[in-house]
Length: 341
Ligand code: HSE
Image 1 (cartoon, rainbow, N blue to C red):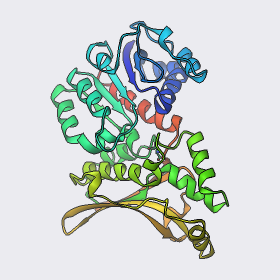
Image 2 (image 1 turned 135 degrees about the horizontal axis):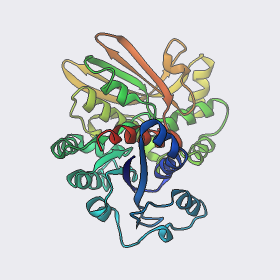
Image 3 (image 1 turned 45 degrees about the vertical axis):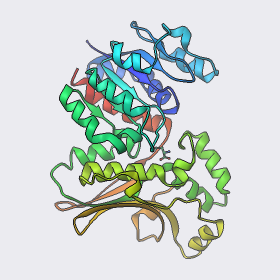
């Protein structure tokens, strides 16, 4: 049976969600997709970096981290993320370090070096795809390896694969939707009387929020997703600073109540469109009524409507965050990559 060797760079919420899925789906992947896997390396600044050519015991690694312990007993130490991408036998690198939207690092370097080392890359890291997609895709094409990043937009809900796959051939006129789970969760919870702080804490506990909540509540995470959509679907060549951005921190309990009285809701809405031939994007809170589909999208659920020439509006709705929901995107990408190994 085909054996896929995986290196995981980053063993935080998403990396561990992916590991849990791998453990649970091992025999399913073998039976249904005809490949088995082994994780030959894990690098994490907190939990330790190890290499084990026989395959790391993932169940044990998850248990150790759950108990607050390092994973170093499960492999050979002395390996860091760059040594893993350069020297390990991994066929595919899962890059799941925290998103940095200023520099894209360390994700950009990990991905660039992995691709240059002829390794496929799967990632949920928004920074590298928002800031350096053209460069990274050119390297992937050059080296004839896959660069897949489904989980950067709408977590495991296959918005990007839909747009780039089945919707290939359409002309995108506009994309509009809710692309951040944390803020939608907070806004929905505030409507039920919870305070902003309580709702944010719950979102963090459930693993929805970014490491720094500012990225969600100030709209930066949604900006990254809008940039990815603008660049991938509209050839926009946008940077995060090109996107008009207003987060949800300016919304008060009174604003929420006022909307409720009018039968409306506040939503943080991302939109990408063309104006006089120029690609534009914005992320702003909007008060919407029941006649707007997004009114009905609550909690951590996200939705994106693609306005196209041939099909009119096509909408995809599903979870926008969460460890397993985001880990699933890596599984979907891994299954695709396995066809190229
Ligand atoms: N923090 C992000 C969100 C995670 O809440 O949507 C998924 O990108």
